[in-house]
Length: 122
Picture (cartoon, one colour):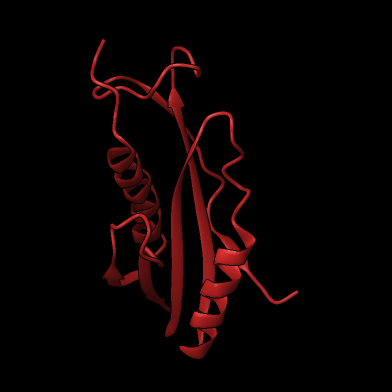
């Protein structure tokens, strides 16, 4: 058995997964904040529009598409002042052999990530 990944390592892995997708989609990184409690994690520019992206690692069996509405409302308020769009990126990570086990360093894992979820005004 390898060493289970720490919360910090899992957060960084989630950020890498989202960051690679953003890069592939042509986002230009203006700022990256890898602190889990400092939001947003990514400030990007695409098509001359600013995008604020909050990334969260979500442990199995939680739903990675479900987000903290109060936090995201606060993020949207902040983004609106900057004329930016607001997104949530929840990344579920679980052990490939047994989802009940932790994710181990250098072992297979499953990614449950549907992509960016835009936070819009109700």
